Length: 137
Image (cartoon, rainbow, N blue to C red; front, side, top):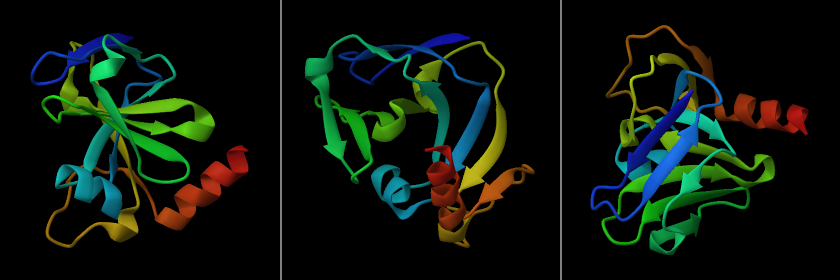
């Protein structure tokens, strides 16, 4: 499945191929700080094509990840997991006709009490997420 999106000012266009049709919510404190709420994202593996990398600022938010945003309008473009060479894009950034399913939530132990999604999902704590990725190595 392919998709595309662009930042608010149009300086950065993205072409992607989805690794799956599953949408995830990340409730970690960094995602909430970055976007003002949980990040709803889709896995695009390493298939992201960026039209104008010179308009993208990459911020190293941890030893293992970068967050990308448009340096002109500030639109959040991606979360990039360096060890896996894997992009996760905010689902709202992408214009698509594809059907997606909200399937899982990570860092559920960091989710504030003031919101709740009604969907039944697979939920993982931060410790479970790190253990999962360590097992993948």
